[in-house]
Image 1 (tube, rainbow, N blue to C red):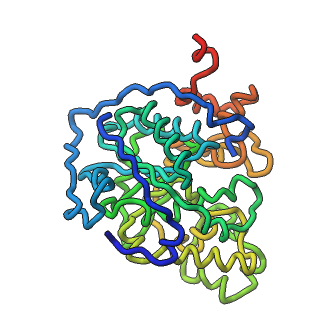
Image 2 (cartoon, helix red, strand yellow):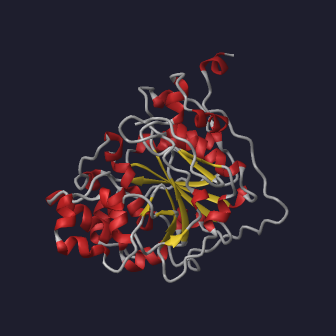
Image 3 (spheres, helix red, strand yellow):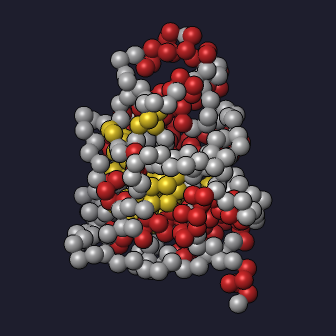
Length: 362
């Protein structure tokens, strides 16, 4: 297995994987009692390539259970799982499978809180609703990263699990080279394989839609911009905002460049002197902005949750849509339950697998 740094080791508890093969939610809802219906099984089209298992040796290590998630021609998708956003996660998974030409070739990797009971409950929920899904759940020890988190403008952004995306290269098996990372407050309306096929030219470590018309400087404090040793970080880089809720990551390049350490170093500096706002996003901008592979904006129609203070309704950006992302304070399931939906929330509703009390009683 690829060695990981001492810092990363301290942040990981046991990586605990349950592969299942062939077989702030915006409200006060007790998500531990939610029940979800079983999603239909989706089948590959005739043109899909065979999914051949890669041996641990051929994959460069990572034997045991993790080796069972190593397949040639697979599309790997990573997400986080927690009780607060579980309803959104279930909808996101459902949307990925429904719009895939080769759904049986998708392997999901879920980072979850380190509690064994919580992980077991999440595993049961996923396996029950998606009995044919190939997936692994990885227990993420958030105790160390919690000490690196600075308060942001919204409490939900301070959840340690939001930072699990920083450690995917350590959590996932070494056989996984390219992974599509997805937030839990989105749905796809296009084939995820198209996103996974994005070229990562010029040694780019990740790909994401860029938004160069956004006010990039607003993500960092006056302290940052007034300090030449800090502001020169972006010298000779056409740094633009990108949203970390949808990314394609080359994990081998990430490991080779030790990018987890680079991100953590910025978080450590932030604890000593406040240089940015808005949670887990700015460290990614500091490390990668201006050096990422481009992705069409259709793959992240973000901001549908409104701003981070009020969560007001927003319209779609101009252009085609492949992915709808309710980033921001407002979540569609909470607004639908409160009978105060935004117009675009009805586009999320068909993917909601929650069983209503009426269905449960009948």
